[in-house]
Length: 255
Image 1 (cartoon, helix red, strand yellow):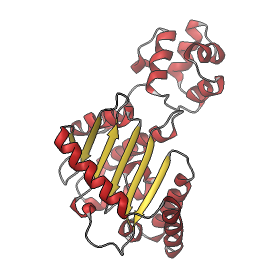
Image 2 (image 1 turned 30 degrees about the vertical axis):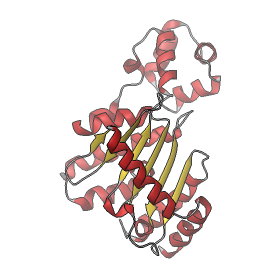
Image 3 (image 1 turned 135 degrees about the vertical axis):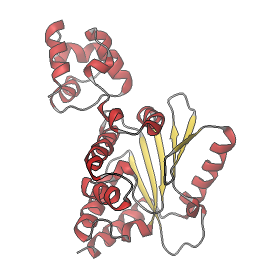
Protein backbone atom coordinates (compact mmCIF):
# COMPACT_ATOMS: atom_id res chain seq x y z
CA UNK A 1 0.00 0.00 0.00
CA UNK A 2 1.26 3.48 -0.88
CA UNK A 3 0.37 5.06 2.47
CA UNK A 4 1.47 8.54 1.38
CA UNK A 5 -0.95 8.48 -1.54
CA UNK A 6 -3.73 7.03 0.63
CA UNK A 7 -3.28 9.78 3.21
CA UNK A 8 -3.20 12.49 0.54
CA UNK A 9 -6.44 11.19 -0.95
CA UNK A 10 -8.09 11.16 2.46
CA UNK A 11 -6.96 14.63 3.44
CA UNK A 12 -8.05 16.22 0.16
CA UNK A 13 -11.34 14.35 -0.14
CA UNK A 14 -10.36 12.86 -3.47
CA UNK A 15 -11.22 9.31 -4.49
CA UNK A 16 -9.40 7.10 -6.98
CA UNK A 17 -12.13 8.03 -9.48
CA UNK A 18 -11.85 11.79 -9.00
CA UNK A 19 -8.05 11.73 -9.09
CA UNK A 20 -8.11 9.58 -12.21
CA UNK A 21 -10.45 12.05 -13.91
CA UNK A 22 -8.22 15.01 -13.05
CA UNK A 23 -5.03 13.25 -14.17
CA UNK A 24 -6.58 11.70 -17.28
CA UNK A 25 -6.14 7.99 -16.53
CA UNK A 26 -8.41 5.06 -15.77
CA UNK A 27 -9.53 4.70 -12.11
CA UNK A 28 -8.05 1.18 -12.11
CA UNK A 29 -4.69 2.76 -12.85
CA UNK A 30 -4.89 4.95 -9.75
CA UNK A 31 -5.95 1.86 -7.81
CA UNK A 32 -2.75 0.16 -8.89
CA UNK A 33 -0.71 3.19 -7.82
CA UNK A 34 -2.37 2.87 -4.45
CA UNK A 35 -2.54 -0.86 -3.75
CA UNK A 36 0.32 -2.28 -5.80
CA UNK A 37 2.79 0.52 -5.22
CA UNK A 38 3.39 1.01 -8.95
CA UNK A 39 5.21 4.19 -9.90
CA UNK A 40 3.25 6.25 -12.46
CA UNK A 41 4.70 7.80 -15.59
CA UNK A 42 6.59 11.01 -14.68
CA UNK A 43 3.95 13.34 -16.14
CA UNK A 44 1.21 11.49 -14.24
CA UNK A 45 3.21 11.77 -11.03
CA UNK A 46 3.48 15.52 -11.52
CA UNK A 47 -0.22 15.93 -12.37
CA UNK A 48 -1.38 13.81 -9.43
CA UNK A 49 0.89 15.66 -7.00
CA UNK A 50 -0.47 19.01 -8.23
CA UNK A 51 -4.07 17.85 -7.82
CA UNK A 52 -3.33 16.64 -4.30
CA UNK A 53 -1.28 19.70 -3.37
CA UNK A 54 1.78 17.65 -2.53
CA UNK A 55 5.37 17.47 -3.71
CA UNK A 56 6.05 14.52 -6.02
CA UNK A 57 8.78 13.30 -3.66
CA UNK A 58 6.34 13.20 -0.75
CA UNK A 59 4.11 10.66 -2.51
CA UNK A 60 6.71 8.77 -4.54
CA UNK A 61 10.03 9.14 -2.74
CA UNK A 62 12.98 8.20 -4.86
CA UNK A 63 14.19 5.34 -2.71
CA UNK A 64 16.20 3.73 -5.47
CA UNK A 65 18.31 6.85 -5.92
CA UNK A 66 19.58 6.58 -2.36
CA UNK A 67 20.66 3.00 -3.01
CA UNK A 68 22.65 3.73 -6.14
CA UNK A 69 26.20 5.15 -6.19
CA UNK A 70 26.50 8.87 -6.84
CA UNK A 71 28.07 8.42 -10.27
CA UNK A 72 25.07 6.37 -11.48
CA UNK A 73 22.42 8.95 -10.59
CA UNK A 74 22.65 11.04 -13.80
CA UNK A 75 22.04 7.95 -15.91
CA UNK A 76 19.26 6.78 -13.62
CA UNK A 77 17.43 10.07 -14.24
CA UNK A 78 17.85 9.66 -18.00
CA UNK A 79 16.75 6.02 -17.89
CA UNK A 80 13.65 6.86 -15.88
CA UNK A 81 12.51 9.57 -18.33
CA UNK A 82 13.47 7.76 -21.54
CA UNK A 83 10.87 6.90 -24.16
CA UNK A 84 13.13 4.22 -25.63
CA UNK A 85 16.21 2.30 -24.51
CA UNK A 86 18.57 0.31 -26.71
CA UNK A 87 21.01 -1.90 -24.82
CA UNK A 88 23.88 -4.15 -25.86
CA UNK A 89 25.60 -6.64 -23.55
CA UNK A 90 28.21 -9.23 -24.42
CA UNK A 91 28.99 -10.78 -21.01
CA UNK A 92 25.94 -10.47 -18.74
CA UNK A 93 22.27 -9.65 -19.17
CA UNK A 94 21.14 -6.02 -18.93
CA UNK A 95 20.23 -5.06 -15.37
CA UNK A 96 16.65 -4.27 -16.43
CA UNK A 97 16.15 -7.95 -17.37
CA UNK A 98 17.93 -9.70 -14.51
CA UNK A 99 16.14 -11.92 -12.01
CA UNK A 100 17.00 -11.48 -8.35
CA UNK A 101 19.03 -14.70 -8.25
CA UNK A 102 20.97 -13.78 -11.40
CA UNK A 103 21.66 -10.26 -10.11
CA UNK A 104 22.89 -11.69 -6.81
CA UNK A 105 25.23 -14.07 -8.61
CA UNK A 106 26.61 -11.26 -10.80
CA UNK A 107 27.18 -8.85 -7.90
CA UNK A 108 28.63 -11.53 -5.62
CA UNK A 109 30.88 -13.04 -8.27
CA UNK A 110 32.27 -9.66 -9.31
CA UNK A 111 33.91 -9.28 -5.90
CA UNK A 112 33.72 -5.48 -6.14
CA UNK A 113 31.19 -4.92 -3.33
CA UNK A 114 31.29 -5.66 0.40
CA UNK A 115 28.83 -8.46 1.16
CA UNK A 116 26.91 -6.09 3.43
CA UNK A 117 26.15 -3.86 0.39
CA UNK A 118 24.99 -6.56 -2.00
CA UNK A 119 21.36 -6.67 -0.83
CA UNK A 120 21.15 -2.89 -1.16
CA UNK A 121 22.42 -2.97 -4.74
CA UNK A 122 20.11 -5.85 -5.66
CA UNK A 123 17.14 -3.91 -4.31
CA UNK A 124 18.15 -0.89 -6.37
CA UNK A 125 18.52 -2.96 -9.53
CA UNK A 126 15.13 -4.60 -9.10
CA UNK A 127 13.53 -1.22 -8.34
CA UNK A 128 14.87 0.16 -11.63
CA UNK A 129 13.01 -2.58 -13.49
CA UNK A 130 9.78 -0.88 -12.51
CA UNK A 131 10.10 1.39 -15.54
CA UNK A 132 9.25 -1.60 -17.75
CA UNK A 133 6.04 -2.20 -15.77
CA UNK A 134 4.78 1.38 -15.90
CA UNK A 135 1.50 2.37 -17.48
CA UNK A 136 3.50 3.87 -20.36
CA UNK A 137 6.83 2.04 -20.38
CA UNK A 138 9.73 2.88 -22.69
CA UNK A 139 10.34 0.76 -25.75
CA UNK A 140 13.16 -1.49 -24.66
CA UNK A 141 15.34 -3.34 -27.17
CA UNK A 142 18.23 -5.47 -25.96
CA UNK A 143 20.87 -7.17 -28.06
CA UNK A 144 22.92 -9.79 -26.24
CA UNK A 145 25.68 -12.13 -27.29
CA UNK A 146 24.80 -15.82 -27.31
CA UNK A 147 27.61 -16.40 -24.83
CA UNK A 148 25.51 -14.60 -22.20
CA UNK A 149 22.92 -17.37 -22.44
CA UNK A 150 25.52 -20.08 -21.96
CA UNK A 151 27.64 -18.58 -19.17
CA UNK A 152 26.75 -20.44 -15.91
CA UNK A 153 26.04 -17.37 -13.79
CA UNK A 154 24.69 -18.66 -10.48
CA UNK A 155 24.44 -22.25 -11.70
CA UNK A 156 21.92 -24.22 -13.78
CA UNK A 157 18.81 -23.44 -11.73
CA UNK A 158 19.50 -19.71 -11.76
CA UNK A 159 20.18 -19.75 -15.50
CA UNK A 160 17.05 -21.76 -16.29
CA UNK A 161 14.91 -19.37 -14.26
CA UNK A 162 16.60 -16.38 -15.87
CA UNK A 163 16.15 -17.58 -19.44
CA UNK A 164 12.51 -18.44 -18.82
CA UNK A 165 12.10 -14.89 -17.48
CA UNK A 166 13.62 -13.56 -20.71
CA UNK A 167 11.14 -15.51 -22.80
CA UNK A 168 8.28 -14.14 -20.67
CA UNK A 169 9.62 -10.60 -21.08
CA UNK A 170 9.63 -11.02 -24.86
CA UNK A 171 5.86 -11.49 -24.75
CA UNK A 172 5.47 -7.84 -23.74
CA UNK A 173 4.88 -5.58 -26.75
CA UNK A 174 7.41 -2.99 -25.56
CA UNK A 175 10.27 -5.47 -25.00
CA UNK A 176 12.40 -6.97 -27.76
CA UNK A 177 15.44 -9.17 -27.22
CA UNK A 178 17.81 -10.14 -30.02
CA UNK A 179 20.71 -12.57 -29.81
CA UNK A 180 23.96 -12.35 -31.75
CA UNK A 181 24.73 -16.02 -32.50
CA UNK A 182 28.11 -17.49 -31.62
CA UNK A 183 28.70 -18.14 -35.32
CA UNK A 184 29.31 -14.41 -35.83
CA UNK A 185 32.98 -13.51 -35.80
CA UNK A 186 34.37 -10.08 -35.00
CA UNK A 187 31.72 -7.39 -34.62
CA UNK A 188 31.31 -4.03 -32.88
CA UNK A 189 30.00 -5.62 -29.69
CA UNK A 190 33.46 -6.91 -28.87
CA UNK A 191 34.39 -3.34 -27.91
CA UNK A 192 32.10 -3.40 -24.88
CA UNK A 193 28.53 -2.85 -23.62
CA UNK A 194 26.50 0.32 -24.04
CA UNK A 195 22.99 1.73 -23.74
CA UNK A 196 21.31 4.43 -25.83
CA UNK A 197 18.39 6.38 -24.37
CA UNK A 198 15.99 8.55 -26.36
CA UNK A 199 14.55 11.34 -24.24
CA UNK A 200 11.05 12.85 -24.60
CA UNK A 201 12.56 15.90 -26.32
CA UNK A 202 14.22 13.58 -28.90
CA UNK A 203 17.72 14.07 -27.50
CA UNK A 204 19.92 10.97 -27.28
CA UNK A 205 22.22 10.00 -24.43
CA UNK A 206 24.58 7.06 -24.11
CA UNK A 207 25.90 5.04 -21.19
CA UNK A 208 29.20 3.17 -21.16
CA UNK A 209 30.26 0.84 -18.33
CA UNK A 210 33.65 -0.21 -17.01
CA UNK A 211 35.23 -1.85 -13.97
CA UNK A 212 35.06 1.28 -11.82
CA UNK A 213 32.01 3.27 -12.86
CA UNK A 214 29.76 4.18 -15.76
CA UNK A 215 29.98 7.19 -18.04
CA UNK A 216 27.14 9.19 -19.55
CA UNK A 217 27.90 10.65 -22.99
CA UNK A 218 25.88 13.11 -25.05
CA UNK A 219 28.26 14.84 -27.46
CA UNK A 220 27.27 14.56 -31.11
CA UNK A 221 30.39 12.65 -32.15
CA UNK A 222 30.09 10.24 -29.23
CA UNK A 223 26.43 9.52 -29.93
CA UNK A 224 27.21 9.01 -33.61
CA UNK A 225 29.86 6.43 -32.73
CA UNK A 226 27.55 4.55 -30.38
CA UNK A 227 24.72 4.62 -32.93
CA UNK A 228 27.08 3.13 -35.51
CA UNK A 229 27.98 0.39 -33.03
CA UNK A 230 24.28 -0.24 -32.41
CA UNK A 231 23.55 -0.60 -36.12
CA UNK A 232 26.39 -3.11 -36.34
CA UNK A 233 25.33 -5.32 -33.42
CA UNK A 234 21.65 -5.15 -34.35
CA UNK A 235 22.52 -6.12 -37.91
CA UNK A 236 24.43 -9.21 -36.72
CA UNK A 237 21.63 -10.36 -34.39
CA UNK A 238 18.87 -12.87 -35.04
CA UNK A 239 15.29 -11.72 -35.51
CA UNK A 240 13.03 -11.30 -32.49
CA UNK A 241 11.35 -14.71 -32.78
CA UNK A 242 14.50 -16.54 -33.85
CA UNK A 243 16.05 -15.14 -30.68
CA UNK A 244 13.13 -16.33 -28.54
CA UNK A 245 13.50 -19.81 -30.04
CA UNK A 246 17.22 -19.84 -29.26
CA UNK A 247 16.70 -18.59 -25.69
CA UNK A 248 14.06 -21.27 -25.14
CA UNK A 249 16.35 -23.94 -26.56
CA UNK A 250 19.29 -22.94 -24.38
CA UNK A 251 17.03 -22.74 -21.29
CA UNK A 252 16.33 -26.47 -21.68
CA UNK A 253 20.05 -27.23 -21.54
CA UNK A 254 20.24 -25.77 -18.02
CA UNK A 255 18.89 -28.83 -16.23
